[in-house]
Length: 263
Image 1 (spheres, rainbow, N blue to C red):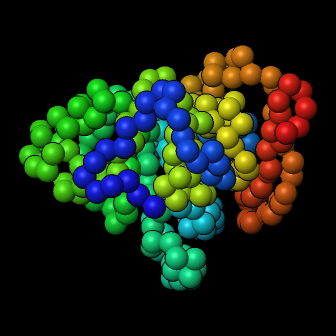
Image 2: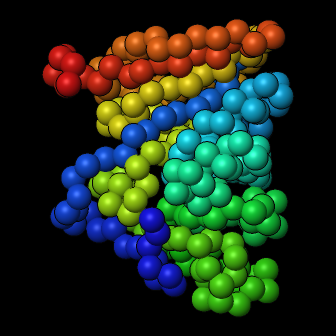
């Protein structure tokens, strides 16, 4: 379920992918009633409840890997660790490792080694370009870390080196071939929109929190600029809805379309 120890995985545009199947992709996000995921860029959303955090842990525990954007990591500087004994036991029964791989997508590689994310007990991966990898290696060197920029340092155990602009279909096919069959998307709006427009998102878990942001600086769940050339609206199918306290937990399936017809 992982790339070879010590060697970054290089993905070249146009490279033939033997395994054509794609992983099941589920997006998991908390939003305000007016559809905002945070008050602004680099600002963490602190409006969800303990019930939502337990929900997030349960969803993450179902995944082989979770992916989030660099700005999401900059905002939170941490990720979600599966700690509930029952969830850990279920992962063991499914022959999964205790924690899914936590993958941050940062084309620039401009991340800070002192973030708590890098000391959390979970495996980490980085999607970046060769230039981004060099930037990250410089960050490691500045932090006084030896180990040629990878697993020996304990910062990242896996690297996925890509061309820019990133070919998400090709990358997802590669994830599947490596054994990552279910992938969770934890934000932000750019990452979610990029995958949505390519038909790569299979379902969506939303926690609707009881507040209105009402700010122009607040970030929405999607990026309108990335969906400008995409046929909107996106059709969803209600799978499940549950009310816990003041929050609404909604599970939608995504109706994927091609040329106006469902596929």
